[in-house]
Image 1 (cartoon, helix red, strand yellow):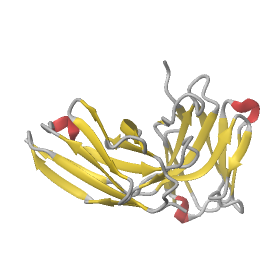
Image 2 (cartoon, each protein chain N blue to C red):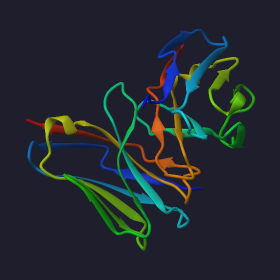
Image 3 (cartoon, chains in turn red, purple):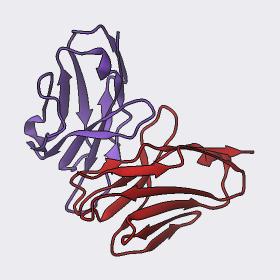
Image 4 (cartoon, rainbow over the protein chains, first blue to last red):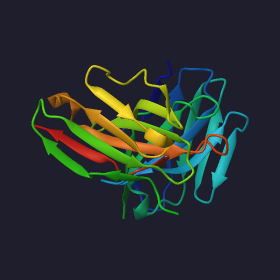
Length: 112
Length: 114
């Protein structure tokens, strides 16, 4: 089955700086890669996703890049703000979102 | 649009007791997922329903866990008997697979087994 590794497990960034979280996956059949943000005690919420036919996707301050050859994808947050503090999870799954395998999460702390 | 609803939000039981969690997906979402999230970990899929059919229950510990989705809408996940290691957050999610890959999560039920 799929195995997703996520790094780093914790990340502290000065407000206004950029944050990068990286994930690798093992199953070449995976072609859907979402990122979820989970604030303390709250539900995971999708912030951005990418499919394997695209190398990069942006949404305002958030971007995701995908390298299918190397089987890794990354989340980039620019101009970080205190409200970006949360745990971020990457996931990988096959077409049709039948089964997502999640990474272990990155706790991002934005330092004011 | 109402999101995924789960109840209860918190549950504390003693080991060997039964417990049940309820999920109401977003209206019109035909696919429903139950995940377990251990502390400091990502969600792990337990079971996936397409309408009322359980199409992937390979990760469900069937000796003590059971689930149902009668009429293809609400779903119940049950543990009987509960063990100490079952303490976790149980998340329900739903999606419309024919339209989008996006899974929408509920707030979860935090289970503590004493």
